[in-house]
Image (cartoon, rainbow, N blue to C red):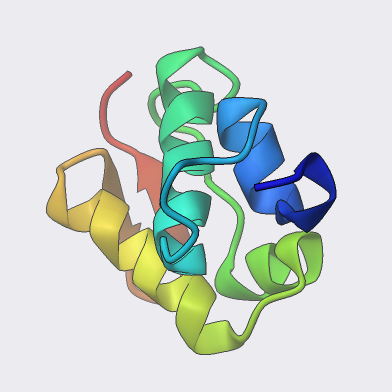
Length: 91
């Protein structure tokens, strides 16, 4: 696959196009956010971007951004406080 065919999400996560071009955008966004948590960009206890902020940053649908945040929550990387947002649970 040529570099021009890569989505911006794929390039940020991996630096090159993946062998599989069918990875859902929510997985790619979750990978990016996971990387930011692991490298300390988002420290424990800090708020991660909201669904609307993710929608704007990555140019995706609200449901796509929600799926990415749900994945991080299910992995125990974030905690959600109703009405307050999602916060990093651990680095």
